[in-house]
Length: 389
Image 1 (tube, one colour):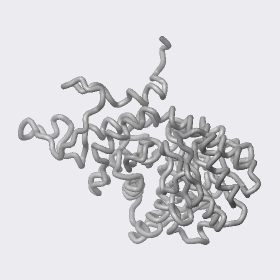
Image 2: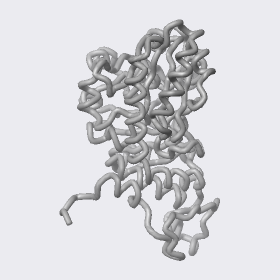
Image 3: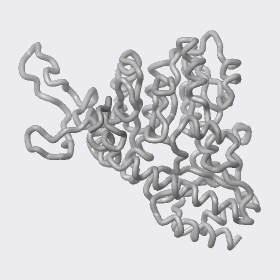
Image 4: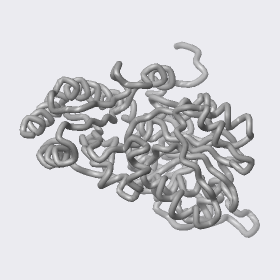
């Protein structure tokens, strides 16, 4: 056998963080569906590591240990949803009067949290085109305490150079948080590129089967991890043991799933380019992608997300989405089922139109999340819908 520092990703996604149950030998981590844990005696508080499941649960900890291994981090914390992870992270790292730089293209929930919730408590946000590091430097202020980027961004797939932004943040001694949901640690590991925190909606690729909602963060230091865990405990936004159990199973096939989904996405993108009813197509694996060099340098794969616009504007786009049969019209991504989303009326409905257009989220943008069905069948479904326009 080769003498390696640690096993390959495919081995760790199955074995990291888990071991057979010491009582029964069960190969799957049990669902510890318990509120509280009996202590052996007075004064020996948390002698076995647990006291109350809001603070920590063995099933959830197993998932946290697995994600930590996959992300190459110091430690992880899991949450009830991806937005719970984002909320706790921002609340842990920002105080009243602080300033935060956020990518101008982010998940609609992140934009909503920033502008309509946290801003009410005196935290100020600047939405910046982080694809150009010079814009981030220009946006820095004396009270900037956090940089939050999402790459690839939802839904336009605009990329941010993680290493470059991490260098800027590090020079100022402020954390850089990267939403890594679209590519997962299999294709992209932000902490290895200098980021301080990698964040996921585990609802998406990590669990991958439309079974649960959840979130996670992985930090590169004890200080950051404990600060976020403390906030999670205060908010009560921890992940349930049942969701952790589902996600533990989903993680085992992460690399296999996302490789196949990415292959499907590329084939779909190539087909869409060739159809005369399609105005434009955006996918990081295409030579036409404007940031192709960064896409190839920063990540080892291009993911299963793509978008396109049809000729005929919004009405044509809506007709197409309503005509599709195999692609499900749904507000999610990353699952084994292929999904189609109209970002303007679904994921980014609360974002002001002027800001959406400035960020490149046009009214006719159709977002696709390629699943594990036959690529030929997915393409045939798109073709029959496009041919009817």
